[in-house]
Length: 165
Image (cartoon, rainbow, N blue to C red; front, side, top):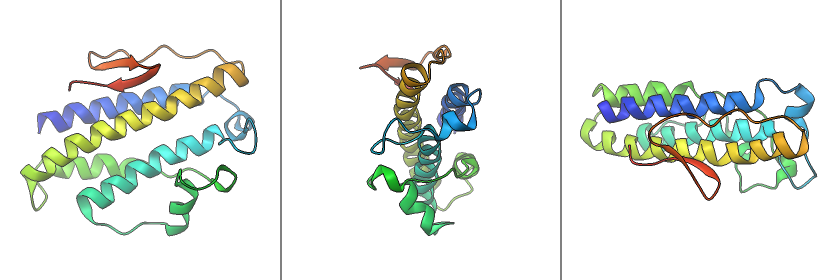
């Protein structure tokens, strides 16, 4: 249970860093695309949340999609020019808290799955943060916020990631 709780804190730290990258931008900045074959910052924000929800509902809860049309829009396998808007991420916390408190049918197994899943989601968040950072700095001319401060967060090949928790 403690590892899930620690990873949820790191997930929140990663999401807070993402917010630091975009919340001071204008709506035009968030929806601007460097070119047709590139995604807007807004798409990356939606994709990060959508992937988190998709993985949690499919790997730990076997829940149907709340919006099948959104699945196609947020799928990174689809061409950039067809990418769309922003879902929420509250489901990650709710499901992981159920797992951490044992309110699931296979609590020990799902604790292991949940810890690996959260690690992947945190690193996925940081992966897209790198692209958002580059557009923010290089194309929009905004300074970057400082990297998150945590014992288990470091840069590898230029990307932030969580390692060793």
